[in-house]
Length: 122
Image 1 (cartoon, one colour):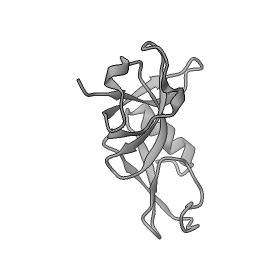
Image 2: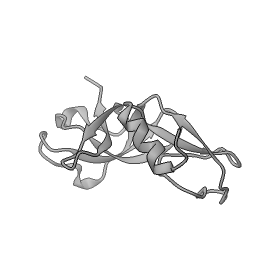
Image 3: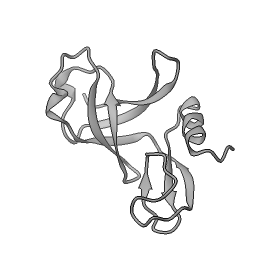
Image 4: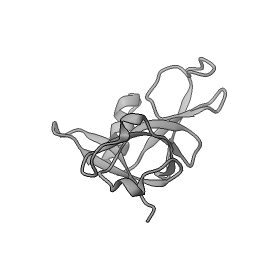
């Protein structure tokens, strides 16, 4: 496996996984690729794989978009870290704070991959 954090993250997406870093000093987990821990400043990380399951933690007011548009939300993953993420186009009645979501990987117009979360509640 590559040691370049951005490459490890992209490789995970290529395999349908959301990989995240865990600081070996303070055990903080986070999705952003980093060289130093934002909590303790530690430089030592291990990579872990998220289950891809979580909940919508927060919805910005700009989320009031038509159903066919993607919305942005703060998603809290089951592993205990939060990240800004795009939600898949979903009817508005299926999107609320606390709604369960699951990871999908989407391709952008330039061919790169990004995490996308689909609300999974009825």
